[in-house]
Image (cartoon, rainbow, N blue to C red; front, side, top):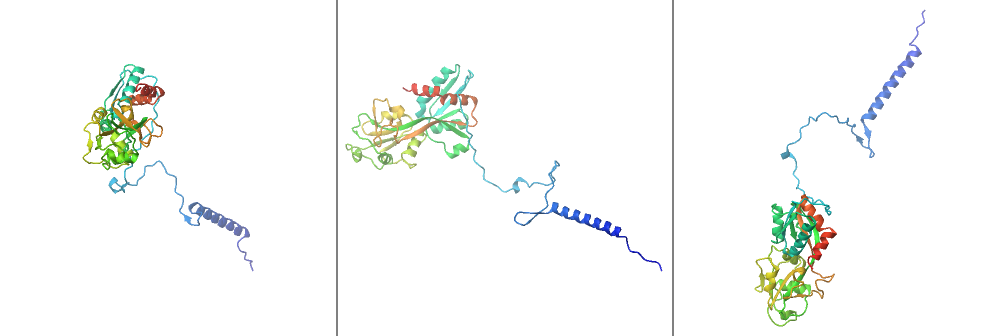
Length: 326
């Protein structure tokens, strides 16, 4: 009887190796397509690297995208330095605050003297009109005596501070009032709550208040600093001038009038008296009615503006600004 033999042990061993190899491949393939995240969740398979092929997906039309508010224009910070030279045909047009007339003139003279052939044109139609002129392209710089509003900044305007200034309260030289005022008394006078000199320790007589027009940067600075953003009074003893002009205001003070102006415009006047506020005259370091005078420009500044502001903020420019006003 013939003996029957089963498969060779060698065949069993080879089959085992094949099955082991297939199992290893399967397990390693699963590790590449499914990862375990740190929190124990199963992460989806890793995406294949992006190729340079253009995407075939279709983006939604603009009308289908969610709307979002537009961000305001961000003011860029520019650094202005004293130019070594300036082309002889350079011209800069300045309009703005009457408080900066002297500053404009002194800087004009110094700039034109240092850079031959240049021309600085200055007029003073008030802060508001100066800003408008810059926005409309009719001026390169606006001389302003107040801060820019958020809306003006959003429209691309920026400023460079030039000097600090003090707002002086003045009365006519013939006014019998000889005392000073507190900030609160000034506020009450210009809001029509105090209408007689006798109410603040002077001789009896109506107080005639002379207010500057709304286009005046000094008007707006006074409203912000003294009236804390409140309105001027509308009583019969308060007169708003038609023009933003200091000389005309001083002529109308008489014996009962009171007005305000930048200190530089009245410091050497012989026809008016400057009143101390809270016991301090405008030349005191802690005088309360102070503000900053600046030049506003449209971003980005053109080369002429860069040159002039570089000079105005340099030691040479600051010296010419101060020496010319003495």
